[in-house]
Image: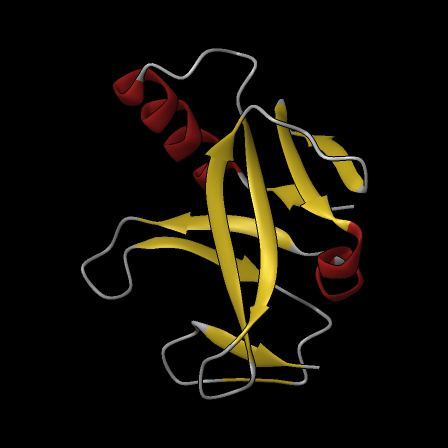
Amino acid sequence: MIKVADSAKERIAQIRQKEGYGEDYFVRVWVSSGGCSGLTYQLEFSNEAKDDDQIFEDNGERVVTDLRSFIYLCNTTLEFSGGLNGAGFSFNNPNASRTCACGESFAV
């Protein structure tokens, strides 16, 4: 499961309204190679599901990821911080053995 914190839910709703995304849009998250720790998080809004997608609903939001990324994201919580230091979405990932200082990349 991929969870959605209240802070992320509020920000997703704001983006959905501002960008005109309908209820058929969901948050797609995935992991790609890169960053100083080896793996980076990616996030976008989408309304196109793929055959190998894993679909989760938490806190009223749908979060979708591909099967390969789910191995790294299992039990992760999507959060949002609006503060001056590090504003944006973040991933609270219990599978990460280390993260870089900026929180943009991780390793397992």
